[in-house]
Length: 496
Ligand SMILES: *[C@@H]1O[C@H](CO)[C@@H](O)[C@H](O)[C@H]1NC(C)=O
Ligand SMILES: *[C@@H]1O[C@H](CO)[C@@H](O)[C@H](O)[C@H]1NC(C)=O
Ligand SMILES: *[C@@H]1O[C@H](CO)[C@@H](O)[C@H](O)[C@H]1NC(C)=O
Ligand SMILES: *[C@@H]1O[C@H](CO)[C@@H](O)[C@H](O)[C@H]1NC(C)=O
Ligand SMILES: *[C@@H]1O[C@H](CO)[C@@H](O)[C@H](O)[C@H]1NC(C)=O
Ligand SMILES: *[C@@H]1O[C@H](CO)[C@@H](O)[C@H](O)[C@H]1NC(C)=O
Image (cartoon, rainbow, N blue to C red; front, side, top):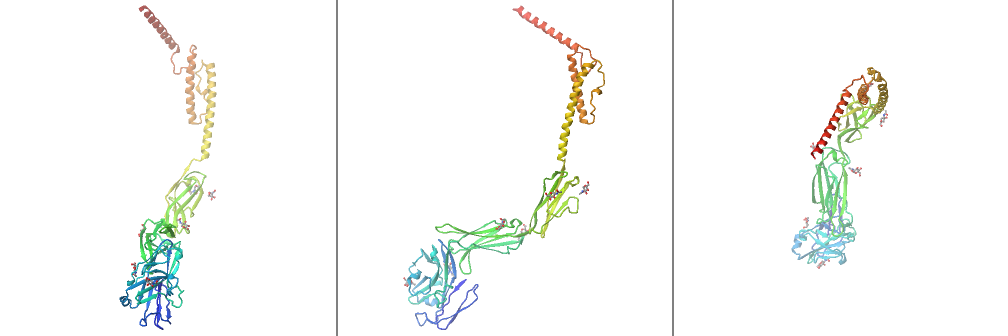
């Protein structure tokens, strides 16, 4: 947006003003008065190029890029000893009112500002100026005036000499506490989907009204493949901006990612100001990370209601289809995200699901469904085992008492078959084993009993010696021992 100021001095001389970027209209001004100090300067034409508005941040500075043109400027310069650049505020109608002068480069007169610096070289038609320590009260239209002394040329640059209050074509300084968020633009329309693998470019630009203290730009959620270039740029209207360009390869992992560009404006005394712009990436891609879960578990008992749930990431995901397969079977089992069934023995095997959207499909890994023994069976088994144990113990107890009484009463004729003592419980191997152990216990029992009872004659010979002999031997040993001891004692006494 340019204010291209044009002023025509001679009567009925028409001139046009044109904005280079968007403004595609012409303003034709017919001038009816003379603004000149010399009759000879009938054809003095002059114009200045300034931005229409600049937005300045409080406690920062603002650069007004400014160039001007005056016909036969070089010629005029030769007659000039002093050239003053002057900034007036509020009106272009100077009329000698010194209170309107905010800056006069002659003696560096500054009014209402802490500091103003004309950085442009006036002899090169450059009137660029920096206003420092901007405050809210500085929001005003400003007019550039040039004075070439002695009496060569004096003029205030304005477009509309009829209406001095028309500031539409002069520079307006807008002071703000909150700068505009950075402008974030993409090479692709991010409202639509960008196919995975496409190179995407995001441009972030933040105005830099004070190029000496430009904002810093930073990105968040930077995609892995991103390449970032940041630089200070001059816009067509010669104001500055910080520009950062990020290029990346769209990945499915960046889908729905909110990428932000943050501009941080430094200030002198006040805190830095941060403004953020965010875009959300919409990336389309075929199914990724496809897997499934089995609930309650992949190891189930017959009769369990199992649910298989297929999961996958895809974009778009609204038209996703899921298909279930069992290894070795070509026909799909189901065409839903979830598949439930009551487990029977023939459900064991390997399963997988396939997710599909309009960009492609992906299969999950296979998972094996196991069938384990039923819980009921385990419980019944336990109860059965316990009952069997109880029965066996009872039988054993009964047999033992019975055997005891039998041995007492039938000791002499104990050639009787053992079968008599055995309970009729041969229905199970484990019980047979138990019976064997019962038998061996019974035998030792008998031996024990017989040892106590060894005077009595017996007919049962199970693994034993003659107890009488044994007894005799012990007796003899004891006798020998006592004799020996006595002898020793005796001998000891004797020696004494
Ligand atoms: C600028 O300063 C010069 C020198 O002091 C003076 O002659 C001139 O009138 C001033 N111009 C304005 C517009 O104040
Ligand atoms: C005006 O001067 C400033 C400061 O020297 C410079 O940065 C800028 O480029 C100049 N403008 C033009 C149009 O030459
Ligand atoms: C983006 O990445 C994919 C996979 O890494 C690759 O095949 C593709 O060529 C890349 N595209 C660009 C534009 O770099
Ligand atoms: C991005 O922002 C949108 C809307 O604010 C939100 O719905 C979405 O979940 C965000 N994305 C992430 C990855 O946080
Ligand atoms: C199995 O569970 C699923 C989900 O909990 C349910 O929708 C389905 O009706 C159940 N099936 C049977 C036979 O109970
Ligand atoms: C599983 O076995 C039953 C009968 O035992 C049969 O009716 C059914 O079709 C079998 N299912 C499969 C998937 O083989």
